[in-house]
Image (cartoon, rainbow, N blue to C red):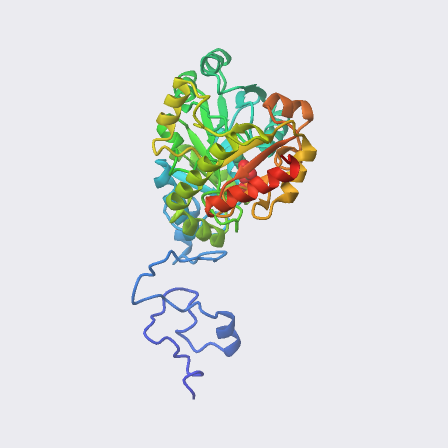
Length: 425
Ligand code: PLP
């Protein structure tokens, strides 16, 4: 009998579970069907986090399966409930956010839905939401409000006295904001909204997609739940779609319970990619912010540019605005999104500019290593009626830049050439 037929294929590996086919002389087809299952890793911990793509997990007996399934014992049973690679991501993000716990999702939108599952708002609940939010979030909120009979009130959260007054008077059960609004990068003063929400007994949900935790940690500013589209800066390489939601363990447990029903857990490979991205997050984001500041300054002096939207651009900020920026962004970096309008430009000029780019990508995302541009009326905010966009301050000619890590001189040269194409000297 050859060693291949002997049933002894264990080497120095010991049988370890009901799945182990190496301990008996099973037939060839059985051994083939169980390929790899009798292997136990020994001789060194992997230095990289393992990707565990398993749909399900063996437990030594049915009592343990029951205990793990009921949450009485830690462990894994089924991939829609939980997974070790996903757990590694969740622990890392909770640590970086300064949160008790985190749940990872298949997209940023499912993480946002998770925040509402955690909040479990009753019918009739009042929600105060930021006036300018990501377009799909607005569509989601309005749909959910109509179906659940929630009262949705939009507020300009950049107006501090009005904001705190509105929270006190309206007594909402939830306040929902983005740290930097999309696409006009308006700064929301979390230090005003956080305590006001807490005093009113409202859950403060913050979508911090534009400000990864190396820049701003909303929980340190009294946010209850923090969501990110990990598709953006956390993943950072434009090669995945995912989301994370961080906050108190009791709320994250509720979000996870709903995630299990909806089947919106992130897959293990994507979780691993996000973990890999997080390792270079501070380095990438630092460079992206430095490039963005340089570009914002350049555009603000350009003859063909009317308005530039970028936090801390300088001359137009009041002392109070500068103080807010210093409190929220202790690193001095204010994000890597810049929006601007071509002088007297509308959608036609924005299109001409976009088509003239050689280096800037025409891509509907943000937070990648590479720089990209989009026109919100044609992409991120196209679902909204024109009057809603006007209320948010989004003009037809607005262009949003997401700045990458390239050499900033090349980015500026390509911008100048494209601006020349739509507004020649
Ligand atoms: N929140 C913000 C601020 C976004 O910009 C986006 C997507 O662009 C999302 C949430 C949704 O994220 P995802 O596309 O990963 O679902």
